[in-house]
Amino acid sequence: MEQTERIKLMEGYLNQASQAVMRLSAALDDYEEAQTAIQTLSDYYGSETWKQDMDDDQQGRLPKDLKRGVLSEDGIWNLLEDCRELNKRMTRT
Image (tube, rainbow, N blue to C red):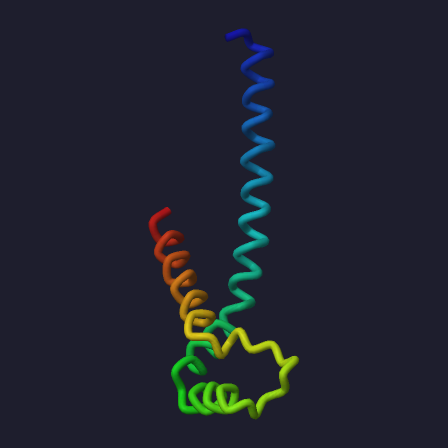
């Protein structure tokens, strides 16, 4: 490979890697900031409060237009499972 071709190739690698590192760093900042929310959801899921909220929803006591993804059987569990997998993945690298 010619010198100028090699330098152009390496410059492309540098740019690609730099952008990936900046995106990952920003995503990790967001993830770190979300840890309090994640822990709060983990504590809520399966608690007596969550069970009461589920029961009230099933009994039609909550407003019809209320978003209630947190009351689904899988919503919080799927998020927590994704977090566990992501944490494992981060410790492998």
